[in-house]
Amino acid sequence: MISQKMADSINDQIKAEFDSAYIYLSMSAYFENKNFKGMAHWTKKQAKEEMEHAEKLMEHLYERGARVVLEAVAKPAAEFDGPLAVFKEVLKHEQFVTSRFYKMMDLAREEKDYTTQSMLNWFIDEQVEEEASADEIVQKLEFLGNSNSSLYLLDKELAQR
Ligand SMILES: [Fe+2]
Ligand SMILES: [Fe+2]
Image (cartoon, rainbow, N blue to C red; front, side, top):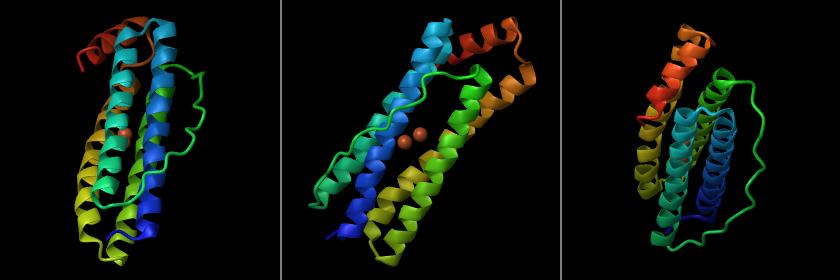
């Protein structure tokens, strides 16, 4: 059995994963418009991963016999102040998501819900990678600077994801 409180918190995270997907899709649309095809590809792929995260959380609720309740997705920003600003936002967002999973883990521990703890461990490990890959891009952008040639090179690199 999963408690209602734990199920509510997982449902809340399902919405947060779709919010993340929407934020990344909006970033991808911004990059498409600026003709940064590689960055558009990277953020679009990120959006797909977030939807997979939502599905994984939904599966957990199904398996535990709890109800999945979908909430409205928040409207993401449409305009950004260039690639560095976008990837700084990605990093900040992923750090925020990590803190959400820590809080969920606190609740799962309080409730001695070992099954949910095991599921959350996967997400907490995943967040290490999410933060690291965003941080790596921020650092590259800060190192390379905003010149056309460096943005061109990074765009090519991110197309490889
Ligand atoms: Fe996620
Ligand atoms: Fe993420």
